[in-house]
Image (cartoon, rainbow, N blue to C red; front, side, top):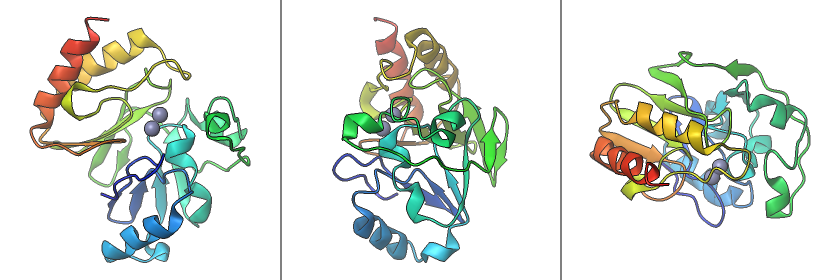
Length: 197
Ligand SMILES: [Zn+2]
Ligand SMILES: [Zn+2]
């Protein structure tokens, strides 16, 4: 885990895969984190973006890697869409990018399976390997969940949390804030709280 600083999302690395890349504003810090993980930039062969928001994808351009994102969120990157990616909220504008893999529910990335969890964005995903959930901005520790007013949908988010609450999650690795042990307890809390909206 490379903890996000500034507006950056958290970044996760497993094998040759990097999950999310932050805004790209703090690349020296990110590169140091990659080195601390014992890796070089050239060891990273695949970027997986949990969703299309700028704070998760802005660093993509610094990697010479293939790119994977859910098919519903891919057009935002392919079109360099400053609204859908929320780049405009960061005072940035994006170049269109080539997406190599249009992910869908059930796809495998090494040991992790793609779970389509729309709500924060329409093409948001989580990655789950049977005990660890990399959850993007769908669900955070301590009862948090993503906002649904930047290309999202509250009802979809509710359904996604309901689904995630059924998983057995040991380690919750969210897109922002701290990672958590006893992940299922955190997700269940989020699921209870979102139902009150
Ligand atoms: Zn985010
Ligand atoms: Zn987001």
